[in-house]
Length: 197
View (cartoon, rainbow, N blue to C red):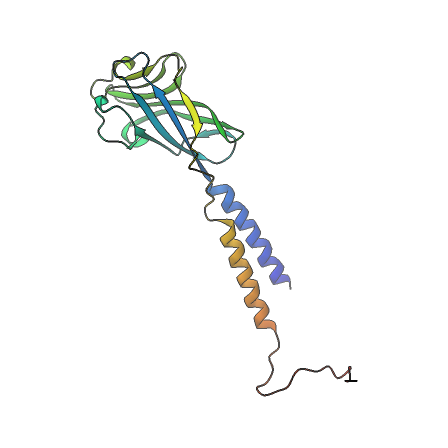
């Protein structure tokens, strides 16, 4: 009996730890040109650890941008493309993205800034990004939209449901092994202390 209780407890601990350690949430951000040389909208997808709090982005992807910027076809993995990652800080409250600070830079040629004090939000030209005004630029962040991606939800890895199902299957196998077996052809088991009336 102790082994069954230990098995159940270990499964519950493992399932809870797996949910907490592997869950992520996906959010989208957009901003439009207000002050730069290239008109259009930039759309980003950000993957964060699930839950409220201040998080470092696990991934930042540029999903859409004006072709005049010269980066090629979207999607573009921004954290890989821009070699220097200075900021990738996001704040989630009540399950919603409420603040972002991103500063990704690639030498003196191009940059992606989001909501940086004194610099605003911008994606520079791919070939001449030495100035924030060369591309899509919103100096006062007036068009910056932080909104959760409705297609995403917290994704626990691995799912606790699978751990529970595996634990229940294990318990069924243990219970089946412990059941006494009857000899072939034997009638129903009877208790000698109880006589038929």
